[in-house]
Image 1: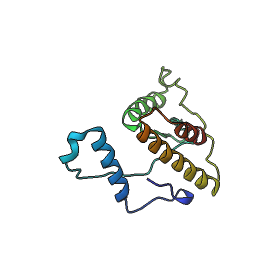
Image 2 (image 1 turned 180 degrees about the horizontal axis):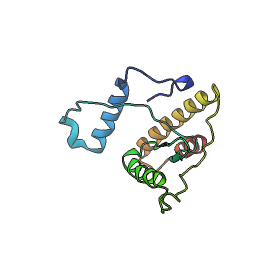
Image 3 (image 1 turned 120 degrees about the vertical axis):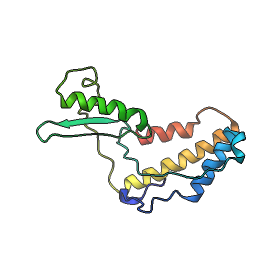
Length: 154
């Protein structure tokens, strides 16, 4: 999903056709037997990506408000752990979960626009180059991907 200037979101919720086609080609390349199996649905959505790409869990006992987020593609497993961590925080338990480094962690803000947009475009270009390089040569992670990860803070 493309980043939109100013962190705007797409309210249509439709996956771009070229994205579906690209993912289909990758699927068939990895699993040739899937070539005759139709894909009925494609999902897209907004990701809340923290600047350091690490999840966080917070609880404000004064207001009673708690939140967890920043899963960056690992939400299925991380939400379970975050829920158990929030439970222990709400109950004021001192457990291994409430002592995890993601509890109450402060995250640096993203760069202001237009720097953020330009950085994202550069990272997209580097990852596209990495994909081409890795697909053509069948190599491990390319230097392009390492550079994109470095720039993005991953």
